Image (cartoon, rainbow, N blue to C red; front, side, top):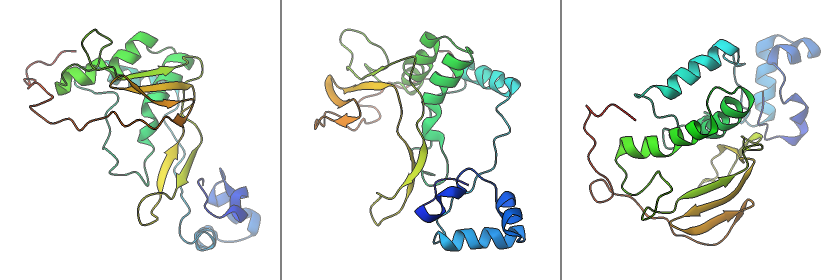
Length: 210
């Protein structure tokens, strides 16, 4: 269990329902119901990860290098209340690069920038190059990573979303203007909506190469 909205039950974070049931002398299902009722049905449960072994991480690296895969892709927030996929980029840089050495830092950055830009056909983006749009993230390679995951209730209507503040990011620059500095919003809104055809080139399916 994690991301508990009820501060009075914060001690349950990171524990299993089975452990709590045994401690309280209850059936597992009864313990589960008691927990979610006390949290107004907002408790989040997750299965323990079974893919943190060396082999699983090597398979991830194989996928990152596959020309059919976009390493930094997402579902654009379709499951923002239940899936932690938003941290995949910082996990790649922290675990995949720094901790396990499965990719070089340069290759990981390429997989998250020029590769997706090229496959999507974005014009003038994905590279630090004269004449391109200056979309830049300045980060500390020794500190980049996902922060603690928790739920924020800041969606219109009071709905919640799973959130994690990345660590190790110093500056975010969009279209040449600084947007974030040391986790603080700078008050600039230089971004723009990109339109297919106007801001993209058609990439043939047969291109198939990074």
